[in-house]
Image (cartoon, rainbow, N blue to C red; front, side, top):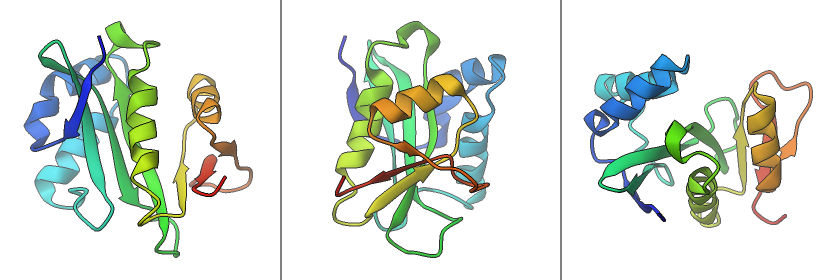
Amino acid sequence: MKPQLQPLDHPDQLDLLAEEACSQGHRMLGRLQQEWREGTNRFDREGECVLIAVGEDRIVGVCGLNRDPYCVQKDVGRVRRLYVASEVRRRGVGRLLVEAIQQRCPDVFQQLRLRTNSSAASAFYQALGFRPVEDEPECTHVWTVSE
């Protein structure tokens, strides 16, 4: 199954995925939904988006791209809220989502940043060309468009 990517239209689309994430101790999708509903982050500024991966008539993954709120440069984006349904993990869904985010960058962002505290996620991002960063409280990995 190769899922199809499409933009997120409404936060309610993520209800089932957010419920699964929460049951596994991950609150990022609940935060995405809450921030969208409150209007504090709708991923709607230039270059921003939320992509969902749809497979077998349901959402199996999500990943967002924002302007990095922790960085003063305007050409720096931030990978946000990546989550893949547990039953399809390690089947390329996360890679598909992040690579789609990376491909959207050249016209708007010269660099992507993110933060993770998971060693598995760190290895995943490094396999996608992100390099580890030290001594930055809001950033653990960076990917540069020209690299």
